[in-house]
Image (cartoon, rainbow, N blue to C red; front, side, top):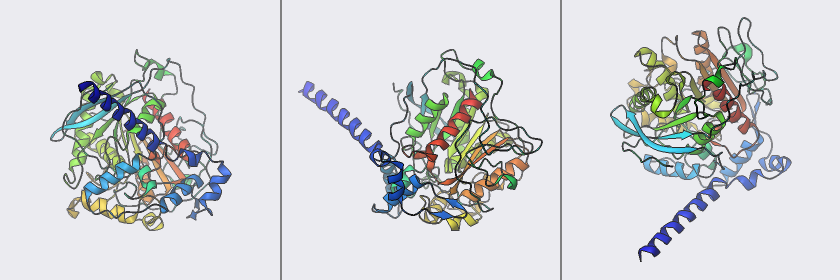
Length: 475
């Protein structure tokens, strides 16, 4: 009887793994079609504000329109739907050496977390990356060390910036699943056992450069190590000594460790650094500033326990997508204000940084591009039910009075993103305050593209640019 039960359990496990693999690669047959066929299926090109939507993204959005949509009504339903959608778009991420479930310190107890350890590589002295075609360094500045990237169509974006911090793809669309929507996450308090672009720097003079590339703006220094010292910082096991503390997107309401598992695996494997994904507490059960305080506590815990994690405390970075990018920006600011250990780098992927103002891109891309205006308002109201908190930099980092002394920044914006304008405005503000900045604008991509690992072409190049920058800066 017991033997039969064990066999059944093993079969269930095998079937579950096979089902997950099928779901993760659901879009693979579509993108295995010839590029010309995919363009034909995508339909007539979509052009808005001088930018042309990437045809492979357009094909995904067209497929999404064929699926039934749901309206967000309650957080539990939205979370379940988002988890299911996120199973459809990760593909098969590269293998890592180890994934370990653990707990970290939150603002009021323990939070679930997941540590990704990449496979070791033979230490080599990295070559200085070539400047991308079409990039230019501002007068008096050093060009950022970045890898060569194929150019996308030139696009100009309107000035301004989208206010909401809510992000995440709408919970009811397949495309949405791919989107690292804003930062929601079920921050489990328990512990789990261990288990085996137009490279604008924010200045108007750089808008519309072909990219992704990275041009350093006035007062901006190159981020990374072009001298070869990065090789000396590698640990004895051949793994980089850097760590990225990552906060997932989902509007501070949806998302968890699993929805961004493939993203974190891919970053760890391709950048050659460890990634610590944190399951912070979600709204509406834990409204603002709970997620922000959890993020600050988790980051400082990571620095305090750097040796235990196998990393250099001087090479601990913070990052996230959408609302997770919001939390990363808050961590960078608050560690300075509170005299806490500061991040070596902040990675802000199409962040929501202002929950107050409404900017032109909110109207331009209010429907049809993964994150909708309805999503933005719903996430904002769930996270900040008290409107008087919304101007506070603890939830709207763009509204901080003093941005000086912040860590080097890698910030991305997307041409078809309602949060585009506020991200660009924050990039400009960081540069004006004299901070080191690498601002990568992806004119043909939408909000949430970081999660769309199955989509080839420009989306894949954007991810490679990110991991190449992390490899340079944190190894």
